[in-house]
Length: 486
Image 1 (spheres, rainbow, N blue to C red):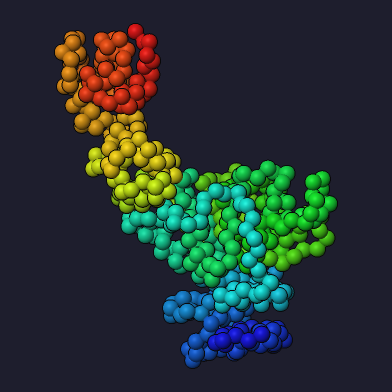
Image 2: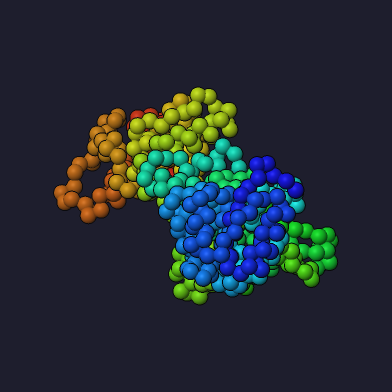
């Protein structure tokens, strides 16, 4: 097998027999090889030449392979580093990945895995790492124009996320994406995949909390025909489907402890055994995971394995909630509305009025960007024009963190029409202890009075108050007013 251009690799190991084995394996793949037996020898080679990949043992006679990684990082060198660690040394593997290693291998090195990892570092996939027909995954976000939607913005918080994505995308280091529901954790994972050498391979997303516990092993690792009742044919699992690409484990904190143990073994051994099979099969998968839980607290409570947490949490990316980057609200809303309008065939795309944007900025968005999308989807359907105003948003006043808007206060203080509405409307002798509750009671009394005057004809009552039918319906629903209240 030949490559054009030929990649040049540096192999660093102090054991001559192992170094020769690595060299012969890579030479058969068509690579040019230089070798070194110590940290000093490796640095001398690196100062004299540039390589595509550096493969270094962790334990060297004059230091650690981490010294080579740190030199590459400080010098701003482009080489990707693969570290070889002693079997079972999870701490060394994690330390290497944190130091910038692209990937790691454990001794004794499996030569097939060795070739796969080197090929992956070079952005190459062997013919065996096919791209099979897509399988259904447990998450619903579609790939397409919306993929980067929640990464829109220029706030410092989202800029920091994008910078991390760009940095970690080039390695094989496991990444744990932390964030509240609706912040776009899967989109961050997709962006990491798209920025890496596996961008052309498959991205398999799995919602760990959506799979019944008794099906987890079969779904993750596949099964053989006859392994259990209903297993009428061989089926590959998520790991096999993601072979050569990326496996994204969403809501990893929801996995039961028994499955956590099996997942840890697969990550360590890089091989899976389907249910009903007698032999394991190697897999070449990058693991990305996400959770809305505090996994450190879950570890302390005994609900999450500490060793698995360390393996998954090599690099952590925290996705900020929308309330922490409200300066991005206008840009995100415009992008959301453009997509919704395109999907609905609406032209031109409706825009938010200044008042509507101000109202949105006063809302905490517990559901984050997903909630914003739903809110704007509904607002676009209700607005029916080129502009979306405050009333189209349908946000109850009690949910706005600054209370009512000035226009709403003015509407309550100055009756719009119908002189009978002035009867009994006066300031209280004592200031109310709960202004919002008091104003709700005043608004409720006004609405009931208008409805009574117009024999509970909501259209006429709304007109007498300068409201639309939709606005009075909203206010009646918020204040729990039914048509027959007295």
